[in-house]
Length: 293
Image (cartoon, rainbow, N blue to C red; front, side, top):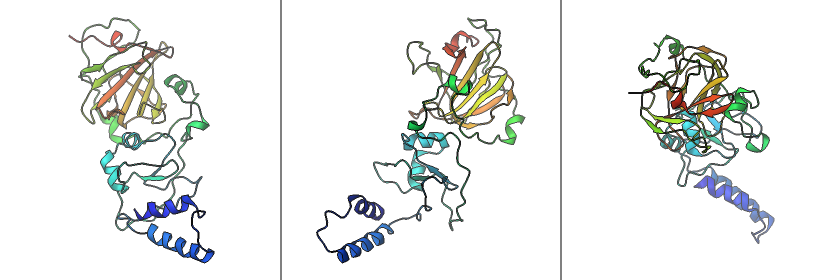
């Protein structure tokens, strides 16, 4: 509360104070003292515009919401609220810093990290699409490190029914996860360009077919942590709302290889959003995946 009071005085200006210059100086000192009180976790590092966010912090961008950042970083929203000492209605401001790592006691010195590539504001770039990312039209978000254990996991064959698909694409497809389809494809609805499959938090997502990773990151609005795989015959598959990404761009993967862990959608549901595209256009995945009995 002390910080907000001090900031409010700074934003309001001095024109409303009918006092002398000396009185203004006294009030300014009081505002500085009040603004330094009340922080339970200690003040955030000093931030200079244009510099990267310190380690353990995220620089808030225009259009960001607390829930979006929580999903992107794989952190519970309540945890972010506690770490940052936020109060209802949990407002965050573009350009500010948000703690995304637990505070240590005593706090270590804060070292700057390399600026994230592709973290420009919406006014500085067009909104990217799945097709533009594959075509190189959008900047890539930073790719997470690949865990060493990811390549040692056995292929996920459990999601593979035996019935033939309705469309023969020349590609041997399999289901990316075992789960119930809770939302189907609708070519006329831009929000339903794929299917949604219910899952457990952290459930392994498998490559639906052999190919090359064309994208692995969180820079595409509305998809969370996203993986796109390029396949033969101008097909690609997309896997959205992942909690953790296990592969990086340029990596070759085989059908059934673990590539991610299931996370949450922007609505908070634990689901995988799965798309198949031909020549950049979305098609119904249920026409290509093996039919379930």
